[in-house]
Amino acid sequence: MSLCDLTPAYIRAIAPYQPGKPISELQRELGLSQIIKLASNENPLGPSPHAIQAMESLLETLALYPDGNGFDLRSAIGQKFGVELPHIILGNGSNDILEFAARAFLGVGTSAVYSQHAFAVYPLATQAVGAEGIAVPAKEYGCDLEAMVDAIRSDTRVLFIANPNNPTGTFISGPMLRKAFERVPDHVLIVLDEAYTEYLRADETYDSISWLKDFPNLLVSRTFSKAYGLAGLRVGFGLAAPGVIDLMNRVRAPFNVSTLGLAAAEAALGDSEFLARSVALNTAGMNQIVQGLHALNLPYIPSWGNFVAFKVGEGMAIYQKLLRAGIIVRPIANYGMPEWLRVSIGLASENALFLEALGKIVNQHV
Ligand SMILES: *Cc1c(COP(=O)(O)O)cnc(C)c1O
Image 1 (cartoon, rainbow, N blue to C red):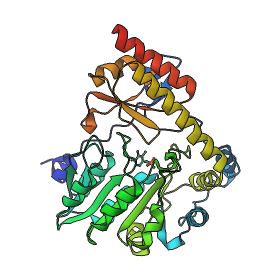
Image 2 (image 1 turned 45 degrees about the horizontal axis):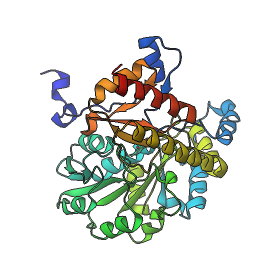
Image 3 (image 1 turned 45 degrees about the vertical axis):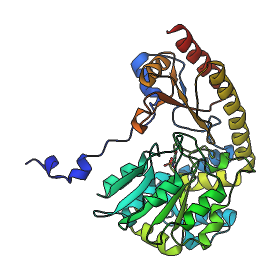
């Protein structure tokens, strides 16, 4: 028996996460000079200028470890969202938060519930700790929340739900969400992943953070990777009851958020002008892309995020053709949607180039 054969079977069974193709990789492969990446739901405006300034001022300090408790950033988060420090944990991206939840609450002999077409990290984090994943069939590509609550078993410890969901962009209203949470038993941690919450229209925004006082088993996860424009830095945070945060802190690596990440996230959090500009750009870009898809007669799933899934038939073939035109989108066959692709909303000029290339491909069979 080799070392690798001796690893737990549940580790060997993991299908690795498939990230969006990096620009540099496509450059190497095809030698293209102009490449547009609309594959990972990144902010097309780049980082907030305040975040860049904050990082520049700290370059000289990088020989020192960061503040392992992230006091300043946690204080800023606490102030902005009205929560006390013991309710806040920082992550190396919100991916870290999802993994802390799995490591602290799941293990062999337990299970986690999530939706079909849910974010890939939920099954990954579940499998990595030897727990069983229960994927509940989606309803019109969205989470069937009632069915998810019904699927909870006595060995279930975590319910993962993204709102809006990635890669489908579907959304469940605040009141519906809360009503379903009332039915979740106390022995289950509800992980409410709100990576795209900043993009919600004002009349759709709901205050999940205020629910924390009613639900001691609720963890709200947020990220600086999307609307805040800091995906490359890896910063996210979780909000929950102090007992939940305390357990998650035990599986958190020391210094999991870098000095630059802490400072940039704090500056970005305070830059409401940048956030508003990012959201406005997304709203306009979403209209542009959805109208373009409509004109091409391609079905799409109405999206509440900064991306939209659209149906092309042979997803992989169209993806490859778009690559040759220098446009990177995301195939989502690994989410059980082989006929679909997901495109992130870019700058108006990028959206236009994407639609033009897609039009040529679907109309002329390039
Ligand atoms: C992008 C995304 C995240 C955030 O990932 P980070 O690790 O914070 O970069 C979390 N959940 C969902 C559903 C996402 O789409």
